[in-house]
Image 1 (spheres, one colour):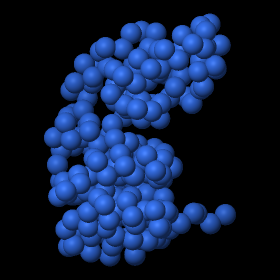
Image 2 (cartoon, one colour):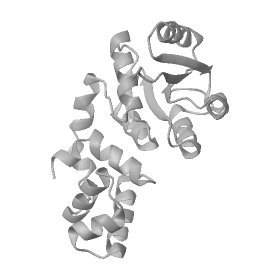
Image 3 (cartoon, helix red, strand yellow):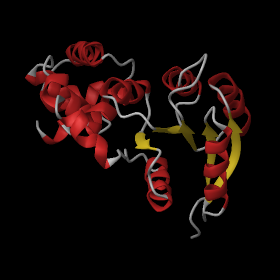
Length: 211
């Protein structure tokens, strides 16, 4: 069967950056550029119209930041995957983008081949992080989840596997209401507002490999 064509939107306030990315994307097989936006508000309107599979999102934009745009976009279209594509590698910004729901985080110096591979991986739900950023995140990785109890870590592991509260309750021999309380506590401690975002953070920070 032919590979699915991935519909893409570029969001960046610099026209030259959009032009360079557009040239690359138009020449790449199985990637289709369906729109460009120069700011967050424009991006939200555009995505409502063209419904892309993946959005390449700049983070430093005037008026509405990339992080704010990601949050607003995924609230309306949770099925869209977002790649934060930026020149900045400061830890707070990386974490903010991931908490907002970005699946992947890449620096703008990424090669064309690696960007194409990252787009395909992100479309499949696989988080991709620029290698230069791994040390930035893992240096405080344990502290980031230090407030979770052992039981909450166990619950989070099953959340990553996509289990419902009822299924987790059966696995851990707990009541569904107890599991619900654990899930609420996990979301609060990780400062996210959905199970999907909590699971994404656990994967990105390798927490599920350390339990």
